[in-house]
Length: 167
Image (cartoon, rainbow, N blue to C red; front, side, top):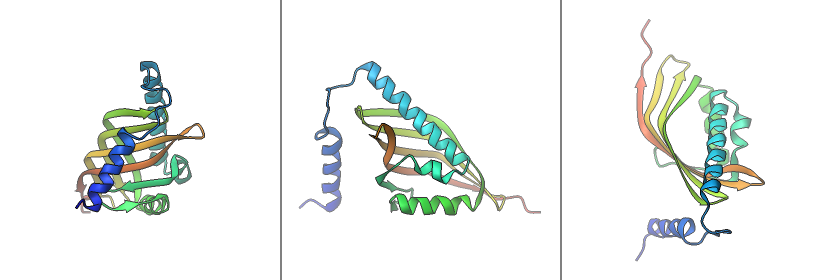
């Protein structure tokens, strides 16, 4: 008897690889490059909003049906994630992301999987520095009314805390 987890994975695999509408078949290299450039610009702008603590700007990139999973297997929706980001911003003085690698899989011209490896650095008001190095993200983006929106993301990484120097 299949478990709920197995059924969920089968549905996801069917969605991504078998049941999606491919309006014009496989994308041309030019279409693929255009999609990659659009996604890269979207993600770069989104990261910039994080670095500027722009909560409204960050969430303009999220689809209402968004679902995410954090590094501790916690599941969250847009509302929960917004609250977590606001709480985080109250604790930090700066955020920095460094990209090591970014890859794309254009499922259709309107649905893309983006993976990113890099380093997250959080500079805490306490003086501590928290880094996730390496940090890994998988994003699902879809085009909604001509704009790329996150409908899925998963994060994992290795957390290292550097304590502030004692005074």
